[in-house]
Image 1 (cartoon, rainbow, N blue to C red):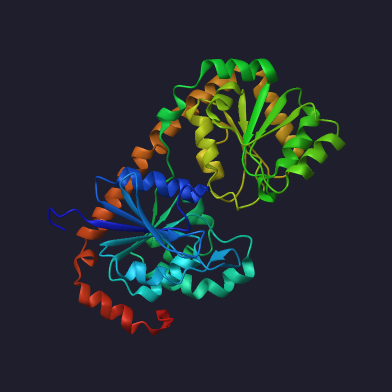
Image 2 (tube, helix red, strand yellow; image 1 turned 60 degrees about the vertical axis):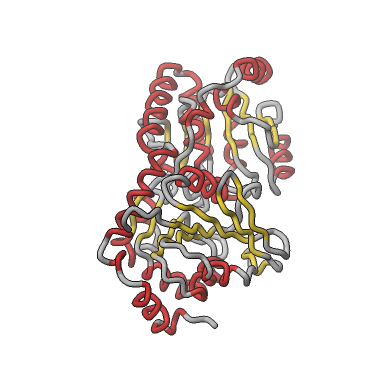
Length: 393
């Protein structure tokens, strides 16, 4: 590419202030990449008009959206928005059928990178119908980023393109977790202590909060639940029904979760299905030097926090194992400290924003400097035009 700064266009679902794990990752990655390359973002808008603005010096285009089909934004203008962008690399974030279809129809000649955040787990029938298009795009990609080796091994979708997969785990800025408010930590410990367990996440089925609540029948401590969601009333009713409403505290959304991590003795992620593809809240707890209790899902969850090294891994939906793990950590201060120190070291080695960004930049440069990366634009356009299976117009 010579000395010219290369251009990268990220295509996601939405962008902050829209809340979500993929959105937060997209924002962090783009902000850290900016300065190393020319970064732009195209996403769906939540409204029926298109806007373009600079968000912390990143050009963000939010394409008009006219409703949703199966939880997928209908944003027809995304095709032209991608087509018109002079990007050297198009970086798609999956799952996002809108982006895949728009990329195909745009016939953009740039090199394609896909971050494969997760399989489509909930809408299996629709996922099967969409699979031929996804397969075409995955095979066209110069590289596919998976967030853990576990996901490459366990995703049926990725098996035919394993040779294209590169593992780049999600990361975060640890400095946010290094200077907590000591007054707030003391307040939390005084109000809820002396034994505190913490869990953070939306109250939705795959999070498995009902198993954590049931396990509290066997644990003398307080479990603080940060977050909200459609199951909250059901979960509150469960806590009351089984007599642990005094041990389970529903905090809802909090302004700053960091003091809660530091005030807790251990962090619990009781998720029960592969919908929990990574569990970035584990990294947040580990950055605060806390041991993690997670579940042995066939996803990245047990890769992030390793059982026997940075915490304890139990079987999903197993109330007794969950309770035993919580009791073990609560009564063993030395073990908590040992796991907590190892957890922080693991974050610094694998899960910082800087590590993630440098690995991503190295991949971009590898793609652009490869023999495939220096093919002429005309040849790439011809390939796309000849691939009639990809043309949807």
